[in-house]
Image 1 (cartoon, rainbow, N blue to C red):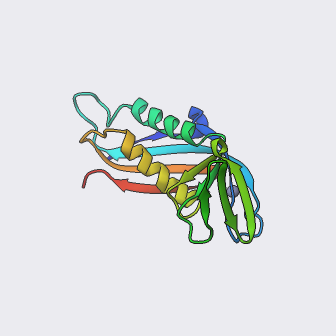
Image 2: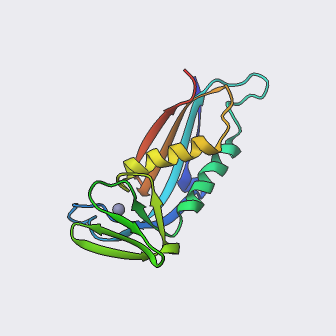
Image 3: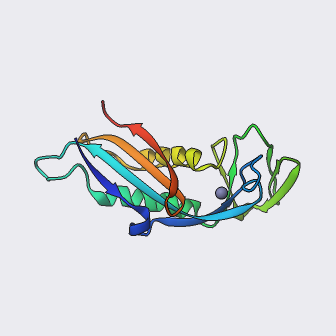
Length: 161
Ligand SMILES: [Zn+2]
């Protein structure tokens, strides 16, 4: 099996966003990161084209997701630790007795239980799966997200057994 790799730092697939990790001594305060998105696709080289799939399709998908997340307050809409309320004025969420109110255009509600790198990697993997029509040569997708250079998490999806 062969693989291709897109490195978000080197390919400029980055975004800036803010979040809160509930009940964490330091990350429990609202703060931001410059994130980078990466991907690896493992599979078989198509003898007709000489590659597993076009690098560009994966890069474009990662860039699209990075643009969707860029310059937002990332809100974990499925967290058991706090309640999220969406009103006309904006989004309100309460974490550990702290009440945040974020104007609607600034907040991005994500279908995750936490905005940890681990959970965001799962979210980005699902978004890439929804965007890219993977060819039969692609067997496995690994998606990575760094919160800063050298510190991140990965999620894996099986494309074909
Ligand atoms: Zn953080």
